[in-house]
Length: 397
Image (tube, rainbow, N blue to C red):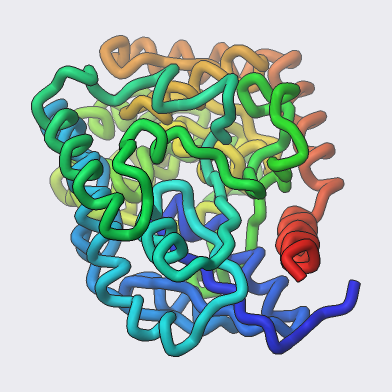
């Protein structure tokens, strides 16, 4: 395909690690093909964008450096307002740059509503990205795994505010229509077989599989022993508010046959978890791709990024979800026989131990995970995604 290097492709990101990381491989591939690529980015993500060869367009997010998961049911219900305020902040701060540097197409995260506002006001075509399950007329996370009841006052407030905002950008004052709208082209960073109702997704949706880019900036990791199986335990970068989980995990797997690496993120201090058994290493962060290259089992929150990285490395999972989208991932992992789902309320020292033994000891789970790993690795996700972007640009003329 002929690469028209004069064309400008803008990525409007949602500032969460699990949303930005899957786009970086695609950004790098498009840069390699000679396009001008810009990406909205908080200060936290700007170095990653630069490392991919693209130009970060900085802004201050209402979420701070990056999105952190709601801690309470009340915060969960208030996420709609936070996402709407984020979208308005994104447009207000990046519009001057993009009005001077008009993109030929905007590739936007499904949660980056600001991209849709800006594109509607300026007549710019859109491609949507899904780092989670895609949504069409037959399946939607929002409908199948709702975060809160629609009659919750905070949900009602968010819907009302959205109805007043939409006409300001030339969009109909129809919040539910806005939320359920399907773009003419979408990139879904999953294999089709992992998608709920996968066969119902038509040519508007391109299933790229995971678009995993190397992350040299995270450093490397080696297991302590070549003889012992590695168990990775993480609740993700945005998790907070459950240090008891890590204490249970240490008790469950301390002095066991596993070499255990636990990453706790910003919201738990490793020193608060007490003296550690010799086979347990606790850190705030670790290079997850490197660790998964050695791991035998992953106990995870079920963020889609983590689930895809685990499967890409052939590692079965025990999924302990914290949110509605993670619960959807956990149930899908269990349904496809790629691991097991352990509900948060069922987590104990004993249940963690039993779930780990059941998963790692099940040859049929291991076989299914390895088979999916081979299928995923037979597809170059960033190339498939970049081809889809180019095809869409060609259709636009």
